[in-house]
Image (tube, rainbow, N blue to C red; front, side):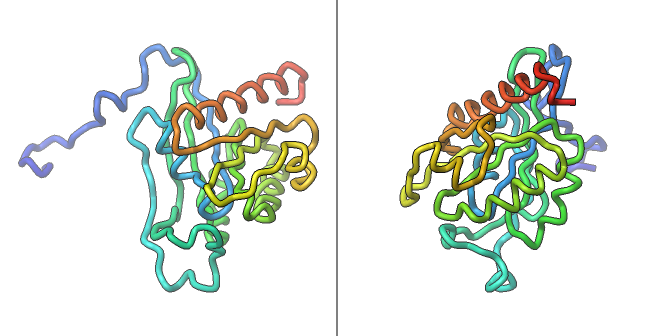
Length: 206
């Protein structure tokens, strides 16, 4: 019985139903270090109520989690975030945000499985965190774009300086974004889809 005494369980909200015109669905993962904005991005761009697995941060993380630049955070993703966005009437993206704290990275392999592409969110105050993230994607053969999230106190660098610092090949797109804004987050996803399309056309995407 539900809370209203009914024998039936409440179903999904009408706005959460998959559009009847959808013909194809693509799995996209949103990855990055702790506090770079993954949960915020999924929440801002998702057309359905996002599923989050945030838990209150505890003393157990002191000395274990790198919270530089995110000292004010009081909750952290411990499994994944999930959202959905329709790119066209026929194409739907399923968005999976990964946990950022290193002690939860063992969950990444399962989240990467079946993903067509990824967004690597970057905080310029902590570029070094991105190397492990991108390395795992490369090991898994998951193509990605790099999105530089805007933080008020984060230094800004020209794209080519970032490309050199992150040791990225010339073909990997780098885009500035503000994940709090839906339009900006959608631009990142459209950049990724364009990149995946170019890889498919060149035969590099199997």
